[in-house]
Image (cartoon, rainbow, N blue to C red; front, side, top):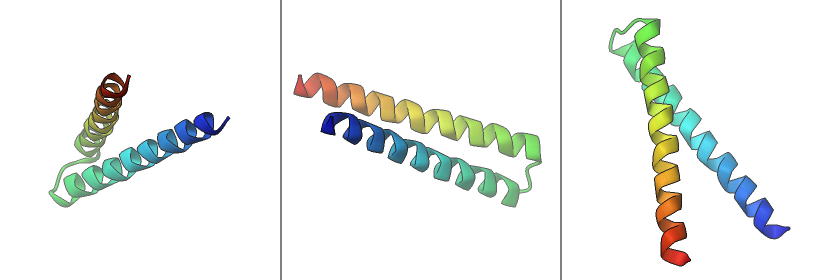
Length: 66
């Protein structure tokens, strides 16, 4: 059972970091003068990039450890 807890906490942390990065990207886009659709696009791209990076790092660590 402790492994499940660690996985869930890690997943929650990764999603929280992705959401914070998304908010930062959208804010910076708006401060740069972009409209809402462009800011939303930047936020979506940032969210996808953070989640993809987390998946790649997880796969690399899993391959190295096992």
